[in-house]
Image (cartoon, rainbow, N blue to C red; front, side):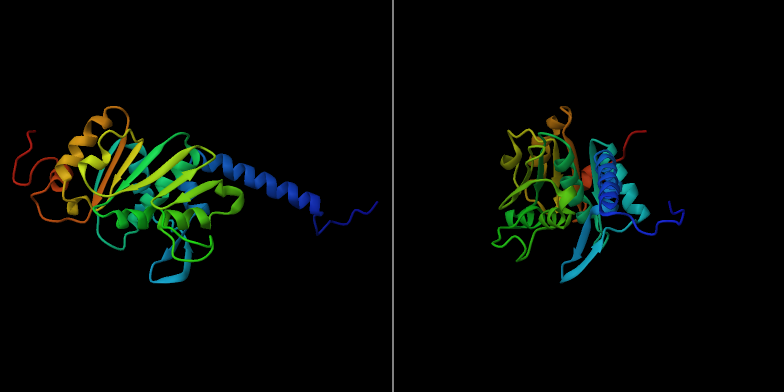
Length: 238
């Protein structure tokens, strides 16, 4: 019997190690969204479709992820180039991938804007421009991706029966629905901000997570009031 060290693993040994690593990764990603995000998720440069990168491990993004995951109502005033939209898209995908029977709504002023975040119609699965969530799903390793159904403005994870749905602005679009998560994108630029908030506010008491994000658009709108805690110029009692 040779006592020489073995420099190579057999094919069966390699397969067992790979399977074990994947199983542990899946176990952890189901409960640790930030680990999933920074281990498996890729982003792209919208101006250069060939520029695909691993999601960056930036401390402020980690703090934002924890803020979004740990609170039922979150209002964020954003600026461009901070990757907040990518972070929120990833949060929606992670929620749908690992939590059962959830409805996640992404609402923007225009339906095409919401669709461009969730899912765009396409022919060949590997061709054409994809929405951000659609891109995130397709870029996941096959062993971690799960089974998804794509439709215009909608992504459904067959493994969990959770759906992400794009909606245009307007209170009637969300009224009567019972989502688990509502993401209001560029809320300061939506025409029916007050009506939308009045429609979704009662849902927060029933455990719906509300995430409101926007670049600022003046001081006299519902987004500004939500962000500051009161209309601008009105003192908040201490």
